[in-house]
Amino acid sequence: MIKPDHWIREFGSKGGIYPFNPEQINPASYDVTVGNHWICPTRDPEELVSDSIVLFPGEVILATTQEYIKMPRDVVCDLKLKSSLGRLWLNHSLSGWIDCGFEGQVTLELQNLGPYPRELVKGMRVAQLVFLGMEAPPEKAYGEGGRGHYQGQSGATKAWSDDFFPKVLGPKKVPA
Image (cartoon, rainbow, N blue to C red; front, side):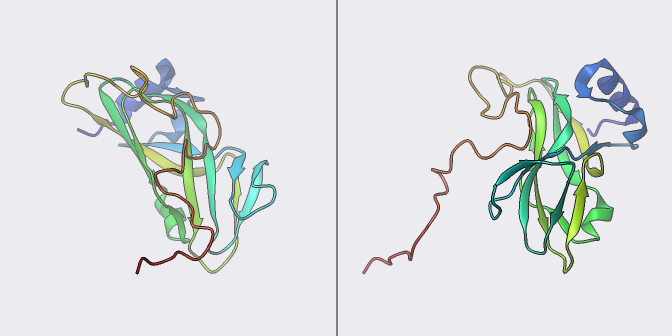
């Protein structure tokens, strides 16, 4: 079941979301804001700290939420881009799932699919968290027993390894 506003208010006020702002509560979600840490693979330097960044058409960037969350053992979370930003052709490309037990800032994978450069500014509401209650807690939650490469992450965080999806830096030879 999706958690309602009063659950989110209690969760946030007890330290589950920091910083917590009750004005960011929706009927069934919580708005999160973008931070000031950016990683863009096509720029030099690739990683920067700035209160704003311009995202050009076709460009992708890793960003971070300002909020640090501490997920309970029996609740998961789905991150959804704010629909107003989607209607301006901003896309949250990939991973939006947050496991029970996760703790940290959330890395955002943003892409400008539109025809115009757009500015992302620290503090703007960029996505919303939808909390879902589990039937029961798992045997091992994220971060327990050595599970969870991103537990405690702070700032935009690259993949822990690219071995499972290696780069191809030259022409790929097709076997004969």
